[in-house]
Length: 222
Length: 302
Image 1 (cartoon, rainbow over the protein chains, first blue to last red):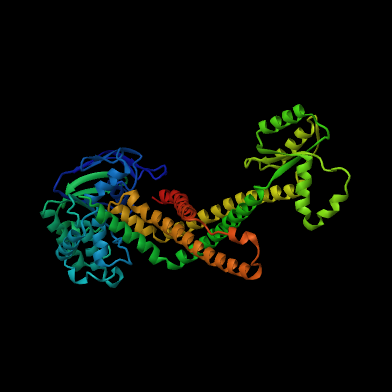
Image 2 (image 1 turned 135 degrees about the vertical axis):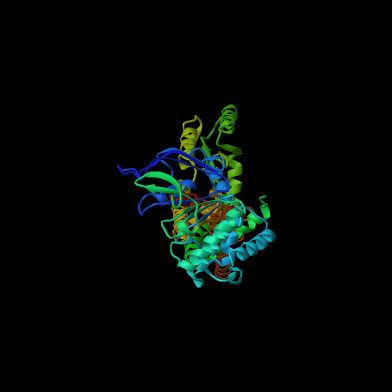
């Protein structure tokens, strides 16, 4: 699903954030991308959906070589993936329904289908009762569920999540992790960035550990 | 599967959202563009009507080529042929001494009795040259007059020099003034639309980022702003035309009450349907130009 080869990124600084990194994520896998603060996790995460361009190396996601793809191809690829952020990135003046529906609207999905799919996905994340609310009327955990619902609504083959439990307490984090496990059990590949070391032993998966620009892979507890 | 209808509906929703979320910015923008378009409309109205009235006067524009006395028939024919061959000439009419005297009598009316005491006809024979519509430059008329004066048998050429000079210089001035006004107001309109859209883009940069993340294409993101530019240009030009029409009707009514006998009144016209459509197209085009100017910024933001 994801193949990264000899990837480097520096942000115009002499010391590289990412140095000659290579790894692969197979279809249906659920992997963590972990490491200390400032290790380059978010940079690597953004490179995976072409939000940044690498200095060198190659990234192939779902058969698309990001360096060579035209913007319209990148846009189509993003419709096949779901992206979740720590700060949710919801549009404050759109309701829960409209925020989730946005991912379908950009793809030109028929309105009847949008109604049905948004309702279904909100039910999966357990927030269907808040459908007419605005994001700022919801708690942090609820907003993250909306963000996850938006990422899921297109039935993506790949989900990228950057610290999705970063702002949430233990209980809510557990609930969010169970949602991701459920999505993974239905066949979606998941790459989750986290520096929360308490999650890793509770939900054991392959871990890509990023430190000082280099990457190591292991399965917790090693 | 991309449905055009649903895609269009989403675009319409985003456009309406852009406009409705920033009503004040759009209102100010439309007001200023309306003012600029109104000034343009007023200029075109004045220019169109003045040109129409002047073209009526212009139909009477003619040169009087006075001939020397006792010209033989061969020289007269040669001169007439020469006048007819000139590029600027539309029609040449020969007026004999006797005809000139008859015309003068008609002009004098009851006072023509004074002419009966004359022992001989003092008026010269002449050619009256009606000028082609293409002759609009004073320099052309002057050159033509000099050219004719040099001909053997021509005594004098008259062409109402001062009147012509004023007419042509006024038309030229109004035309060049129009160019400057049009360019200036168009630039102002484009700048205002571009600034409004840039403000809107800045205010919605987070939304644009989210749109990109969920897989919106650049055209899907840019099209609502394109339509916003079209909307501003269209609304402003229609509003400006409505105001111009109201002002024009008011002016015509006032003129009818003040100078009911003025012949030019019947020549005052508002824009024709095709001119109205053209003006609306110009307004829309300026809106689109404003969008294109701001879309550079949209690309930079991406």
